[in-house]
Amino acid sequence: MANYWAIAIGINQYQLFQPLSCAQEDAEALEDFLVTEAGFLPKHCLLMTDTSPPIGDRSTYPTKENILLLLEDLAATSWQPEDYLWLFFSGYGVNYKGKDYLMPAEGNPEVQETGIELRSLMQSLQLAELNVLLLLDINRAFGTQADAPVGEETIELAQELQLATILSCQPEQFSHESSELGHGFFTAALLEALRSGNGSNLADLESYLSLIVPKLCHHHWRPVQNPATIIPSRAQVILPKLAMESDLQSEPMIYPEESFAVARAAPPLDDYPKTSAERGRWGEANVNSSQQVKAPKVEKSQGQQVKESATGLVSQPMAETSLGVNPKGRFIPNSSKGYVSRLPSNQPSIPFWKQFILWGGGSLLVAGLIAVVFLRNQETFKIKQISSTSPNAAANDRQVIENLPSDVYDGLRRSTPPVRLKNQSNAQITSSSESKNRNQAVLDLAKMSLRQTQASDLGMAIATARKIPPREPLYEQAQENIKIWSQMILDLAEGRAKQRQYASAIAAAQLITKDEAPYAKAQAAINLWRLEGKQYVSNKTLLDAANALIKSGQASTYNRAIEVAKKVPAGQPGFDNAQKSINKWSEKILDLAKGRATEGELNAAIATAALVPEETGAYEDAQDAIQKWQKK
Image (cartoon, rainbow, N blue to C red):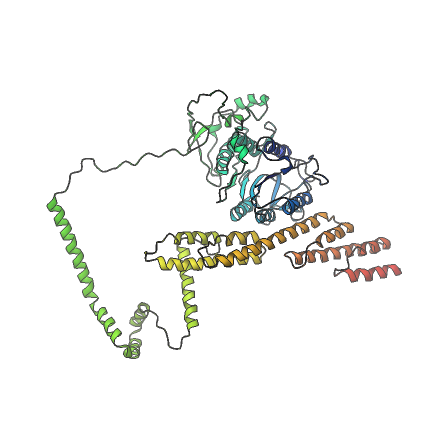
């Protein structure tokens, strides 16, 4: 039986960034809901905030080291394939050199050193074979080396790795929080959706958030904020069965009563401008500001309450959308009007003799066209008959053709099928045929506006080609294309695996189905890449933890980092990087020792140089320096 897990991270007090107001409250509220109302086990819901209590001997203060070590420990000892994981983060995010990072409590402008790389994090979750829901209420961190809006890479990764992900806003927008709500706008809407029963699946949750979050922004006089939702192709349940079966009652109000007067004094919610930025990345419905909702009256039976989830956040009437509204508060497409024929209802029938003339004339016209075509091509038919009965004349005919004028010879050469030469080997013919077939397959991809460098595009092409029935003229070519495209997918996957992009490689290879020739090879490669991927992620996590230990100018921290990096086993992915880091840190220790010797602190220099491990390249130089300083 699959288990449900949750990790809620909320950081208010950053050491070097401006403090946030509601991030910690966001994480605490979500963790409390999952435990008390959604049926999550308390021991499976882990909270990491500025003031969260430790878990046994482990600190839950949200530093980079603590977060990565917690994830590594859970992956190694607790999580099982097909378990469910909610990973919630409320805090600062940064994009640096095209990569998205989450900023832990000690994050600073040196993003690569102190940030948690989202690509590595998402790949490790995908390799753990979990059903993941990633919830990111990210604020932009100012004063860092960020050079692009955060979120773009995360969206692309979520699509590529097929991870359910919801970002609090589009990459070009900002996330907002409100002291009146006591939460960020995104988290406030998320909690209300879950409590009102609109969050049992991702589609309902997306619809609710895409409508409520922009209204909250307008209601509180903030720039618009549209959540970005990535829903994987495989259907995924996000709440335990217990929570879905129970009636999660919504609270009448999320923000305090004293803010009610402010809400009543606010302008109507349906008057805000409709810009392209307000429409979500995935095509959220535009709000029609000119109409009011005409909700049908629903009688409340005894013991049953009508769910009015939107009123908990916004006291103004919601505008009607293009999706329509039903009594349960869910938005469904309006039914389109039936097709109405434009033909006259009293159209007169055509007499029989007129029909006979029309059919007879048409048949004679077709017969005449066939006769004209035959007569015009009669000479061609004779040439084919002569050539088939006189094979010995081929050489003479070829000589005659080559003596024709250049323009006539070029036309004949283009219209004549290729002839196999006597001295041409079978291998050359096969290679030429395969090259021709591959070029044709690539050309067919281009005709469909698909790219040969994208595994997903190749998968779409294969699915389209499979729809061609066996008796169709293009069936043989379609089958040949499928064979070529499936091999191209495997080639792309192998290339990604060589670059240590194991999650992307596995996602690509999984597009190859049982009906395709490379299936067995792809499955064997997937099993190998999963093993190597887990090793790589585990070893990379160790190196990240080692890097987090280093403090500039303190030789002992480099020595501790080296001891952690030594845990990377030889022969596994990431071992070479670990060795490079160990050698670099050893040289750094020796440089610190030399600097102290230059300042006349010989005893401190000797003690520092002694921290250089034996297995490193700087060890011999360190020993020579120690002997030199001891003689002084």
